[in-house]
Image 1: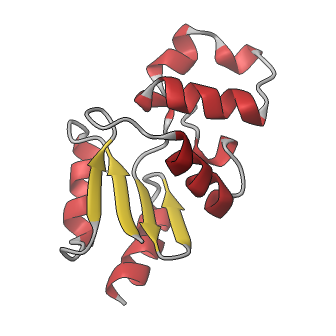
Image 2 (image 1 turned 45 degrees about the vertical axis):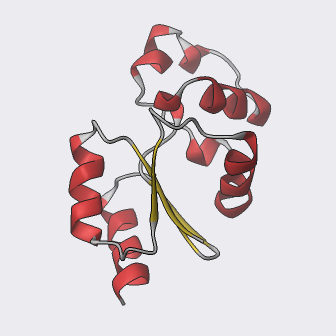
Length: 117
């Protein structure tokens, strides 16, 4: 599967997708207009190793809800991501059996290498 979960209103996501220049066989899913399903988050978790790895601790709601002072379980991370798109660390790039999560330079370079060789 070739898929990119992103936020179309996010400048960083748009820049990364532009840099990667994915082929037309990539599916782009705007997580704000098309919510993530339980099946999709479970597939991401299998590749990433945990729900925490998919979770954005930089989200405004994370600070507003004071979640950093709570002891969150894997199930909590999963529920929060399904509850609100802002909790998914973006973008998430799926390429066959590989996953690239987030926008760090290292992750983007690895995704670029995997996609464009």
